[in-house]
Length: 104
Image 1 (cartoon, helix red, strand yellow):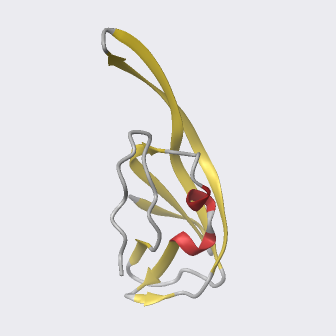
Image 2 (image 1 turned 180 degrees about the horizontal axis):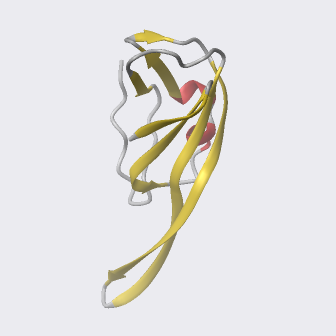
Image 3 (image 1 turned 135 degrees about the vertical axis):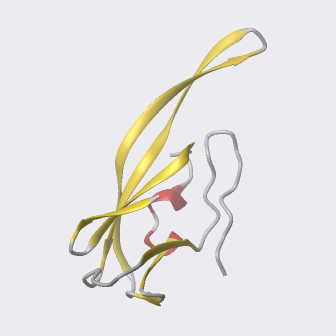
């Protein structure tokens, strides 16, 4: 899920908590932003917007996991148009080790 935050910033909210262990989560090359189906150019910055904790029951023990729920991506140009899409260009992983599908 993605929402415009500013004229050149978009917030991406992940359906699962993402692992902060991977440097790819905050790598500008991990994302491509499209407005009306066209790339807006290189991403300038990616920062964590929201962190969360989850408690899981594993082998009858509670396990507390921390991860990233959302990031804000700053683009090199304004995000003006009728549609906004975020593509993943590198393999990001969630806190369970599942990989996000890469868009080629």
